[in-house]
Amino acid sequence: MFLTIALISILLSLIYVYLWTIKNRYNYFKYRGISGPPYHFFFGHYKTLWSTKAFSKQIQEWTRQYGSIYGLFLGRRPMYVVSDVDFLQEVYIKQFSSFHSRMLSTIFRTETDGKIHLFRTTGETWRRQRHVINPTFSSSKLKSMSPLVNECIAAMLNKISQITDDKQKEINIYELYKRLIMDVICRCAFGIDTDMQNDTNNIYLKKLAEFLENFRPTLVKLLPVLNDYVQEVSALWLINRVQEVVDLRIQSSSTSIKRTDLLQLMMDATHNNITDHIDNQSMTKVLQPNELIPNVFFFMAAGYETTSTTLAYSTYILATKQDIQEKLVEEIQNSKWHDNKNEEVYDIATNLS
Image 1 (cartoon, helix red, strand yellow):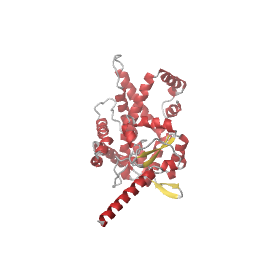
Image 2: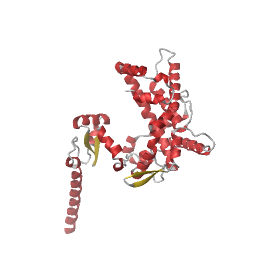
Image 3: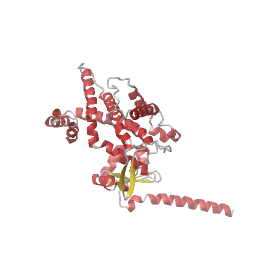
Image 4: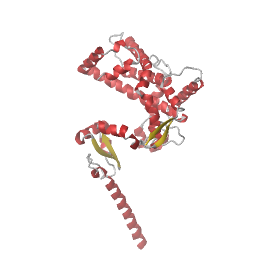
């Protein structure tokens, strides 16, 4: 009898301590004077976010209510929501050495073989990869690739011209944008000319579409057992093609002229040993060979749908907002756009408001 009472007392004490710990964690923002919306015990703000129709709309609504810096709880984990530019500059630039990690999404499993891209790394590995890859997207590097982008855009405009010969025919601009972006990615990332803007059955486009269609984070949340397999679908074919391009580039590196594309820049980063001093600690900035293909592949997957969707929505806004369209036309006409064919176009485009 005594033993039973003792065990029950210990169990109740453990439950009390556990609940007290959770309750105390929910005081995180209160102790720091940070406001935020009401939370649900144990669930935090997940319950509200799950019940809303659009996650982004709810965040915008809370931002209007609580300002540019406020706090949320993802379960029991505190999270700052920030839309203050000065604060973000402080974190991402001035004090980056103190904020060099990131939260890994639950839909990504941890790799043990080292073949991991930027979006699946944490800690020092993430910081090293980010330092190496960031310069690849500098303005000077993007300028050097602008002739490749211009060729893709010219091909799309030619395609639109062919379609609009029939005055009554409607254009699915989103499909054209998807082909444009994939064409840009293949040329700028791998130096491959696929002619996919004219070939609707292009194998690269099909395989990437299959990969993105099968990538279902919601399904993973409902069935965690699928977490180990969700990223394997359709990706293998694309990764093998990337591997073939890398192997071919390595074989011809000593005999051919270096290309100006993402793959070459990342390949250069695998043997250019640069030292970056952060907090008086030396960090070798080099991209390991087994990290090359995952990062190039993820660039392909991440840039395809996001960019094409942004272009489609921008086109919709221009088509439905006459004042914005007229302002853009005026800025283009007043610029030196038509006098420049190559890299200078990048500067002109970035200066448009």
